Image (cartoon, rainbow, N blue to C red):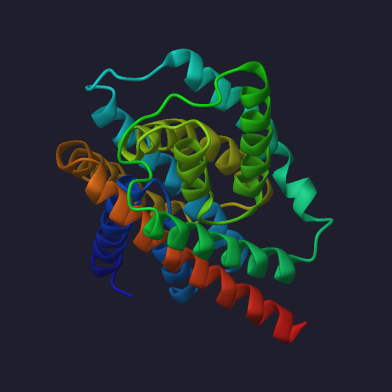
Length: 260
């Protein structure tokens, strides 16, 4: 493939995937990883390349969202403390569970999350302060740990889990939840996962500049649209991407089970 054409295609792919992800709170891997596989990378190399590129999702979104200045830094610390150990342990946990059934089950769950949000018209449209007592924080933190473990082992979709959990359990509106997810999951969780994967499998280094630039610009654009257009756009973007990610995971899991 011609180098200029290749780099342009990778840039546009990353720009589009991360703009959608920044509006919905996750799901960039739905588009990005399959294309990297289609272009000829092995799964392990494509995963390492995608994981590193996904860090730029957090960078671009952080640059835009920090201008708003609405973050609760104690809550940020809580999400990191609960989630990062799960990210680190994710690869070990997933080895003890059959891969096909895990991915298939997560696909059903992810699709269900999107449909649940679609049916609950008022969900996440307005902030409600919930479950901030000790027991509520412990339960919420345990779930964040589990999602972190999934983030460390799967390729896409876990940011969407965090988004809905912050909305449903802690009462955040969608726009605020996506802000936390893009900064904390996109930047910190993903960088931890990317570092862990890169130690085991080198990425396609020459493709990373185009992917990183596209991801940074795309996530900044998506975050800007989410901030300016409000909860309605973010909610719809979340629901569409969640169902699409769920369908993809169901298909991937079914494919593994049928060939096992």
